[in-house]
Amino acid sequence: VQLQASGGGLVQAGSSLRLSCAASGRAFSNYYMGWFRQAPGEERVFVAAITRGGGRKYYATSMKGRFTISRNNAKSTVYLEINNLKPEDTAVYYCAASNTDGILSGGAALVSDWGQGTQVTVSS
Image (tube, rainbow, N blue to C red):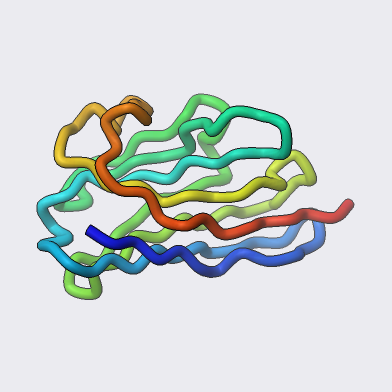
C-alpha cells in the first residue's frame, strides 16, 4: 500500500495539529496502521497504532494523553491528532502499515509500508 502523509508544519507550543495519512493501492481496511516519529539525531520511535477496524488504539507510554490516533476506512486515511504541542515533539512523523498486529506494540520491523514523513516543528 502507498502512503502519503500530510498536515505537518511550524507551530507554536501549546497548539494542536492533525496529521493525515492517505493510503492507496490495496484494501486499507486489511492493514493495521501506526505512527512513528524521528527527531533530529535520534532513532525512529513508536507513537501510536490502531487495529484494522479502529476499535482498539495503542500508544507509547510517553505519548498517552496528548496523542490520538484514528482512522476512516471509507476514506482510506489514518489520522494522528496532537494536542498541547511541545518543542520536544519536533520530529518527522511517519505513518506505517502492517499486515500483522505486531505494529500495535511498536514493532517497526513488522511495518510493510512507510509513508514519506511529514515534518512537525514546534517553537517555544
